[in-house]
Length: 114
Image (tube, rainbow, N blue to C red):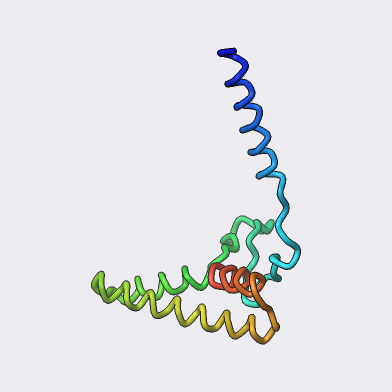
């Protein structure tokens, strides 16, 4: 009995983990890529040109704040303001595309990140 009970618990835990991993996302939760998104995969190029990198709006804000050489508190404020403006811009795009609910939420997150 000492071995049977832990074996049953292990089997139940393994089954629960398998069921959790096997779930697919809902079809309406998958949104299209934002218009301003750059490619996120490697493109074969010659060795002379630099590789194409994916730069999101958040990273663009970070680079802009870093270039200004502000103090820590001012840099944080400018970063929050820049990201908020980018989020509003992405929200406007989602509204123009008439996205609702979770599709809009996913689109705005991917737009700010991409």
